[in-house]
Length: 298
Image (cartoon, rainbow, N blue to C red; front, top):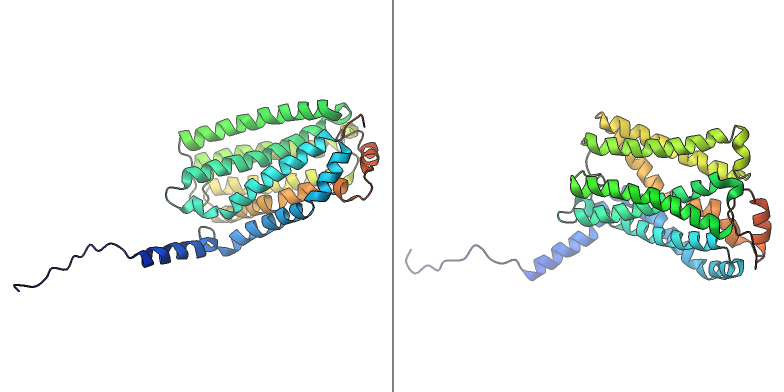
């Protein structure tokens, strides 16, 4: 009909609708990717641990300044850095299923997992040094060894993730990418083998090289079981079993939500919770064979 006005169909979206979409995206982040319970299981323990560290920060710094233990100071600082990275990793789970955020997620995952791996390897290095570990020399030797191993791990993962496009840190589906799961099988196998070897040492004549405290044996046992279960889950996921993917996610939640608090309880809690500021002398006497503290007290 003549005189009828043409109404454009390509209207630009209303700012109110854009705001509503953004608010909806923000409010729905706990339900993205793996779902509400998965995200809560990651975020809540990690956040509570950071809150606990904050509540104890003043007391901890006071005891560190009196103790003058290079090893304890270094581990406390590393624990803070890795805990913050891990909390960000837990909060930003939605990045792995958001278009355009995959590179940022891969980078965050690479640094977070590498930081946690550095803590693992350095602790194992201390355990294996035994009577030869003491003070600043032990710290430098351990950090050099750990740094070399972790640097190699980062380099290989970066090649596969950013060079070959292997979705190593993307766990939003159950697809059996054989390259991805093959890499995780090798990774978990090596860790399980190291922890298994230390458990074997505990029942041989070499046990004198290991710390005498039962807590350290329990730490090694728990880490061996966790990596053995993760290894098993990676193997069955690689062969197309859906149960393996669920089991792998369970080990991921346990590792990222509980490992750092577990490490704190085993290796740091006694040092910080003792009222006597000269605990380091008593604790060092008990742990002389492990080499966790300085040999000279100024």
